[in-house]
Length: 226
Image (cartoon, rainbow, N blue to C red; front, side):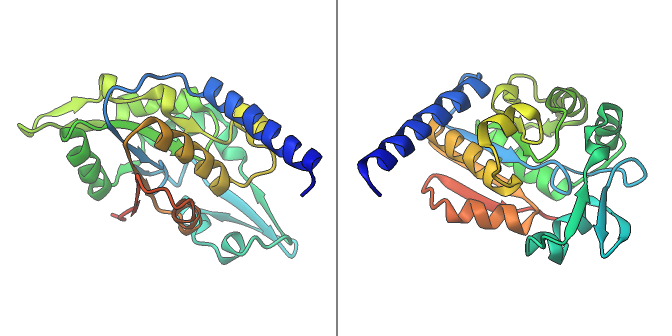
């Protein structure tokens, strides 16, 4: 790499960092944060409302979120497959798929434990409609405090550190990176802000990228299923 290439790479890194800092505008209030995916991690989204369309060899089929995350063509980045995420761009479907979904209690219990230890909470999803998701999760999510009482997250929910990376603002910053790589960039940012970051996700691809970051203050947990 010559000096000009090195200079351009350094400048691009600074530009991306600047844009990322503008994306996330919350204040750290604890030493740790638990960051969770939504679909098949916090909730099993209502399959009658939302899903992904897969077209291969001229045949289109409809997949649930779990079927999509574990599809071999997705994991292998098969270039001959087309994916249609149009359901997730519909604000009403995005909202109702969460509100009418089934909570995944095993993962919510893990989040409860960290919140009781003083951790913040944020979501990190490949969906779009970030503001709609924040509104839905504010209604949907509760945690069980040390007395066993269910409470709304309120200021524990760090909306400014939460991300729906399918939104245009993330596409503009991260360009052609795939969803797992975009999540990796957000995790790098959060690991710079917090002493400890707990990441819970069900997608093998997302978990692999997170592990490859090699961040010492990042703990990765594979999501449980109902």
